[in-house]
Length: 383
Image (tube, rainbow, N blue to C red; front, top):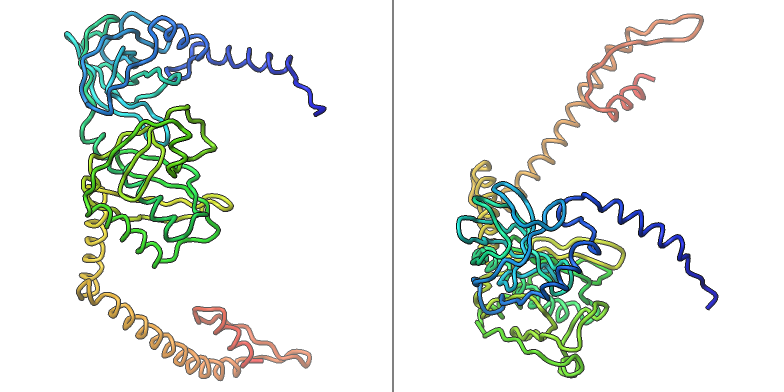
């Protein structure tokens, strides 16, 4: 096609990147120098998190700010590599799990879980007490509340996608997502914002599926079979020849994340916002379960506070605001009338102060009118 490759430039930039990564913080260390040898020595991580949140494991390696280490002391940060883990590593829009890894005389707080290389899991965090040593037998425990909230949000994301396509149409395709314990975020293709009626319809569809409390199931299928069944996925992303297919209510999608056991576990669903992200792309943020309940309470509390200040009830708040707007408009008209009346009298008084010099009449005065429009009108009258 007539294109060439600047191989020398590439090698120069690669060498610069290698030097920049030397001595860097955990997670920024040169991948080529740290993780591949660990994979070669220990193999990939056995992930158990679909079925359990706790597991016994062996600590295979420690990665610190200066590379691999044999120990990690209290207060130090680093990454632990286990032979098997219930911790989900961030992937497919789902954030990494948090929790605790503990053994004989030590406790390690896992603040994030990442796949340093596909299938090779590292647990990032800090030693709370004791000294962590390579080879130790450990118990890895995922933070149940955090994982449960993440599962609710992830399952709700699939129901949201299905409802969005049903309300807006098949053009509302997924462009990305973020699922964590505190929120869910869903990016989709669109040329216009959702109407209030559409938002209510989407919420109704998702909550109806939640109330049905159907079982959420997954199947491991060949990619061709998954497509033949109508499974939806972000096909710009890379999938293997074998994929996990998630059945959740009316939704059928490819997904490797962790999910609730039944739709009823989601509890409730509400859309917090629908905003523009880029040309042709919009973003929905939503809440489920306890987060949705917290949002409802916060909104109800704000309404009650405003209603209290206006000395009415939340149910009558809209009517009260309409009446206040009418009163404000009436007061504005009265103020304008009084200003004109005052201005007319003041203009007459000021005009008498004009002086004449060489056949030209002059008037200089300071007036307190409050707005430019009234000042222009007075100037016209005086002229």
